[in-house]
Image 1 (cartoon, rainbow, N blue to C red):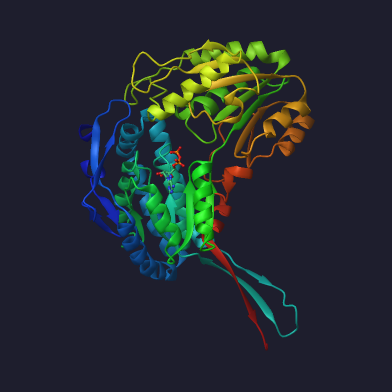
Image 2 (cartoon, rainbow, N blue to C red):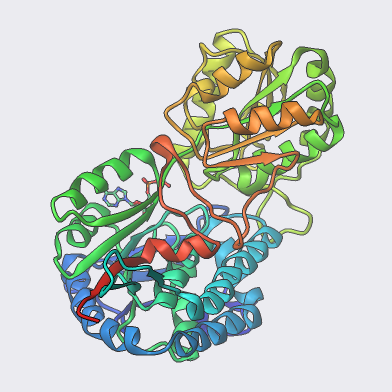
Amino acid sequence: LQKLLKRKDLLCSAGFLAGNWVAQSSSKKEFSVTNPATGEVLATLPDFGREEASQAIDIAYVAQKAWAAKTGKERGAVLRLWHDLMIENADDLAAILTAEMGKPLAEARGEILYGASFVEWFAEEAKRIYGETIPGHQADKRIIVLKQPIGVVSSITPWNFPNAMIARKMAPALAVGCAFVAKPAAETPLSALAIALLAQEAGLPEGLLSILPSTSSSEMGKEFCENHKVRKLTFTGSTPVGRILMKQAADQVMRTSMELGGNAPFIVFDDANIDAAVEGAMISKYRNNGQTCVCANRIYVQAAVYDQFAEKLAVAVSKIKVGEGFEEGVSAGPLIDDKALAKVEDHIADAVSHGATVLTGGKRHSLGRTFFEPTVLTGVNKSMKVATEETFGPVAPLFKFDDVDDVIEQANDTIFGLASYFYANDLNRVWKVAEALEYGMVGVNTGLISTEVAPFGGVKQSGQGHEGSHHGCDDYLEMKYLCLGGI
Ligand code: ADP
């Protein structure tokens, strides 16, 4: 990896603790970050624990006050510069991301630009943290609403988007005047550390940001929830861990934002443009090798177009080139680890044992390790695990349906409510289905919905809070009402 980088220093081997690069943890423990495609060790990092988290929080608590006192324009200028550095170093950041996570280089580069777009967006929004005036309820009263930064924010993020998941949280928090203490996933901490180095170069004041590499996630989670100087926890990850963290945060009545699991339905109606639906399914299902919380998990196809859609999808899927992310033309990397591979195999075996047919793929890839063949299953029904559990891998299960109301009921029959997608052209149907889907996000005739200008978030057990858009600031702001009397 070192050889590929123009700037070797972006591959960090220390944690970023309140402005200092710390190479040894108080426990002296270390851990290695490896490339899932090859097993190569990319870096060895200090394994931080509660001690370092508490230090970072103490310093952040002080630094935040001075940061909040700056104007939005001043904070925005630092973020803008930070964004420019991310773009300038996009190739190196992408290489680090591909190496630690496995996704193809072009996709990694796309993620870097996507992550940076949040930094740019919130650099602009920093100037627009508007309050409100409300006509007084008595003749001598005036009412004003202020929006103020919440304070020190703690963050826990997953491995599937090592750059963007943290950028989406860090940018709004810092833009509105909060401090940010983060624990990235132990599998992929290098992308987060690299952008912290760029934040330092952009002139982010010391102490405002910490990136704490750690394998003791539950200990870090406890410090984040129990430390009284922390006012907010923002988490992206699985619903079971989100539940644990919400319970822990409840003891302090701490504000939380939760971006949790999904079980996205992708519905193809008989009036849809089938080629467009196949293209959308390819993006929604196979991007990141099926390892995104908004990936299509259940594909429902209306009976009249089922065979046509299945055939076209299988042809497109069989053309996916699987391989190491750095290889030219590769569009699917390895799965993140053996556990992920086992889950994919289990879901396929379970579906087949209940009567499903493998149209293409279905087994481990000849490349070995955690590479898996992109798969399409037909004859799928709701008795199978793929109907209720998030597969988080390159498997498209195709359910057949006849009736519109019935498919809406099936699509909503889950504890999750993050992303959903459907393809249809009849205007009445489009409107009716879009309103009926119990999801925070609905892609209509598109398989790609993520952008910094729109509010990303889930309902039901997929979480609460929003990332992106002007609403994204609210997750990091408190509302304060001033009542001026005797006027
Ligand atoms: P994923 O399936 O994406 O790994 P997880 O919810 O297990 O989802 O992990 C998301 C993040 O939450 C990771 O950074 C992980 O280290 C962290 N994590 C896992 N368990 C806990 C816990 N009990 N408390 C705090 N953080 C945790």
